[in-house]
Structure formats: C-alpha cells, structure tokens
Image (cartoon, rainbow, N blue to C red; front, side):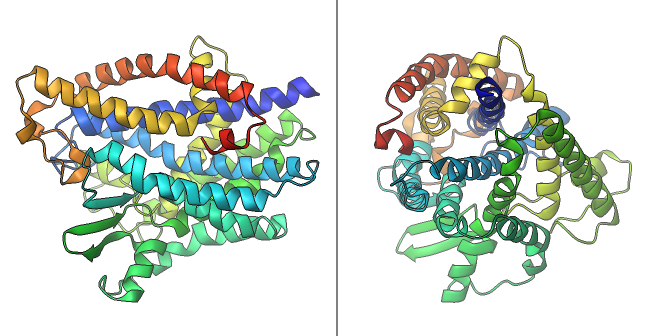
Length: 397
C-alpha cells in the first residue's frame, strides 16, 4: 500500500515538474524572441505571429492553471494528513505561507524579473495569485468538502458574467475590483505603479477545483477508478470548450471574428483569455491537465528524474530560473555588442531589446541550456529538502 501511495504522489510531482519545464520555455521566449515583453508583441496574434511561435506560447498556457489545481490537490492531501498530526494547524500554515509568497512576489521575484532596484513597477503575477488563494484556503478548508468544491465550480463557471463590470480604476471600487477580477494598473503615487496580472478570484476557483479532486488521490482510491474519473472529466471539459467556443457567445471576452477555417480563425479560436483565466481557458487547459495526470501515472522515460526533481522543488526552481534566464539574456546582449543603455530596466521586466532576438529556434536552444544548468542545483536542493523535511522553514521554500 505504501508503494502505491508513493507512486501516486509521484504522478503529481511529475506533472508539476513538467509544467515548470514548459513555463521556462515561455519565459525564454519572453527574453530571447522578437515577441518578447519589451517589444509588446502578441505571440497569439495572427498578424504579428507565426505558427511555431503561436504553438510555443499556447502550450505554456497549461502551466498556471495546472500548477494552481495541483496546489489545491496538495492542500486536500495535507488536510487529510494533518488529522494524524496533533498540534499542526494547516490553516496557520496556509495563512503564513500565503503571506510569505506575496511578500516574495513583491521583492525577490519582482527584482528577478526587472533587475531594477528602484522598484518602480510592481507586478502581481502567479506567485501572488497562489499566495492570496492560500490565505483564502486557510478559512475555506473548514467548509464541507462538497461545498468548497461547489464554490470552485461556481466561480469558474460564472465569473465571466462580471466581465462587463468595469469601474473607474482610480476609485476604491476600481482598485478592489482590479485585485479581485479585472486586473490592470493601479497607481501608487508619483512614478510608482502596481500591475495586477493575476486577479485572484478566478485562480482561487481553480485551486478549489483541485481541492475538490483531492479524494481521487487518497491511498484508498484505486488507480483504475481515479483514471476513469479523470478521463471522463477531461473529455467533458474539452467537449464543453469546443461546444461553447463554436457558438462564440459566452465563456471568454475575446470572441473569434475571422472566417471559419482560415488561418486567422484558428489563431483566434484558441486565443483564450488568461488574465484572468476565462471559463474556456480553464476548460481547455484543465481538460488537457486531466489527461496529463493519467499519462504521468505510468510515466517512464529518461526525463522522469528531471521532472521529479523540478516538481519537488517548484518554488526554488521558479525563483532560480528567473535570475538565471535574465542573466543569460543580458550576457547574450553584451556578447553581441549591446550596451547597458539599450536595456530599459524601468519597464516590462527589464526585457531585452527586440533587435537582439534569437528567433524561435534560439529560444529552444537557450531553454535547453537553462534546464541543464538548473538541474544539478535543483537536485542538490531536493536532497537538502528531503534531509530536513522536519524543519519548519523548509516548507516555505
């Protein structure tokens, strides 16, 4: 029974590691391709992009919703485990870890993106969304499991009904709504600005969906039953996505407009809103995620070890990869004759000037180089984490 439990947890770690690897690909594209953040080009736009660039960007859509849903599953498993640990408060842990994540988003992670010590623009991204969702989960785990799961379903299904609500960004309602659902800029006074890229209510809904899937990963659940439910759920999500998207009326604020069957149509059909994650975005990505969980249940390949390592130290990987990829990008500019004056550290994460792009092929080369550099360091930290798993601080990294 113990080996079955370990194998099942490994499938979660494997998928988590896989999405971390794919996430690195997205950020390599940001820093090494003409469609980087500084150039302000949309890799999903049929006019500005190409099929390889489009697919490279689209596949990375799997990362955030899969990771957030897996966090919800882990919280459920922690809740079950905490019942046999007298004196341990999961609520306190989620509250403090969530606050810690938010703090790091605004400091260490922000600097990794920008390399700007003046902190003129604060971006609230996925770590913030996970952190504030954990703070909410500190209370929500005390709800009956079915009620918490139902809340996640309702948020995911219905939050797009509020898309038309757009209060003025400068008043209190607008600021609160930016944090909750709308996202966007919040002016802090002077030249300081906060940009909410990941408004948290829809992400909390996805975390609650993962929490609702938690019982599938208990030791008492048979693999055959779990995989059957995941398969049914995956097919249901993907078929629902196709059915709703074809009618082009609900579920995403970006309707398709081109002639069906054309190149532009396919670009638009799968161009789903991530900021915040729309219903269609959630259905498509989580539907694929269900099948990936089934796939990783019996996954055996030379890459298994790498996925496990990255999946067991995801936060360490996240912070480390930001600094590594940014440093490598700057070195690449300087080697090609660029100067510090050409790099704008005051805007868009200190992105690399468009004139120094390496094309989509170069993106994949730098992606693989960074993965090779990250693996030994993450492998070392995985061993440290395993050796000191009883230390309270290790759970916050």
